[in-house]
Amino acid sequence: MGGKRNRVLGRCAGILFLTAAVASLPANQPLSAPRPAWWIHLIDLLGALTGAACLLVPWDRISRRWLHLIPPVAVAEIVLSVSALGQGCRTRLRPQAPPCGWPTTACTPPSEPLARALRARLSHGAGG
Image 1 (cartoon, helix red, strand yellow):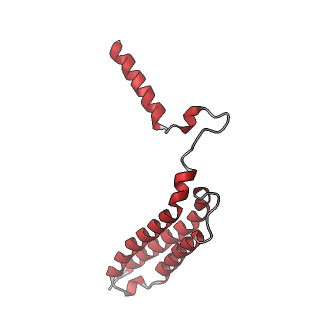
Image 2: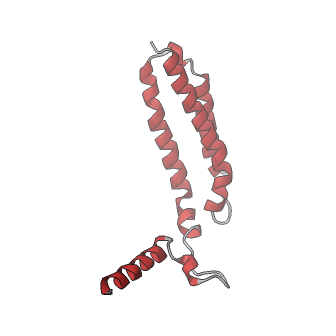
Image 3: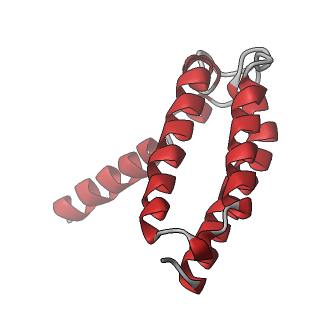
C-alpha cells in the first residue's frame, strides 16, 4: 500500500496539472493564428480534469505503482497540446520581415550578434 509520501506526490501532480491547465489558457492566445480554435480549450479542460482526478484519488490507500501512470499521461497531454498548436507556432513566432522602423537585427537570433562580436574581438586580438 501507499502512504503519506504517495499522497503528497499525487497531490503535487494534481496541482501541477491544474496549474498547467490554467497557465495554458492565456499562453495559447499568441501561439495560434489568428486565435485558437474552440477545441484547443478542450485540451486545457482535459488537463484540469486530470489535475482534479489526481487531487481526489486516495493515494494513501492504493499501490504506489499507480504513481507511475502520471508521467505518461502528462507527456500525452503535452504532445496533444503541442501537436494542436504546432502549426500556429511555426507561422506566428518566426518573423517574415521586420516591421516598419525596426532595425534589421530584430529578426536575427540573439546569438548571432553575440557571435559576430566574439569573432570581431578574436580577429582583433589575433592580429595584435
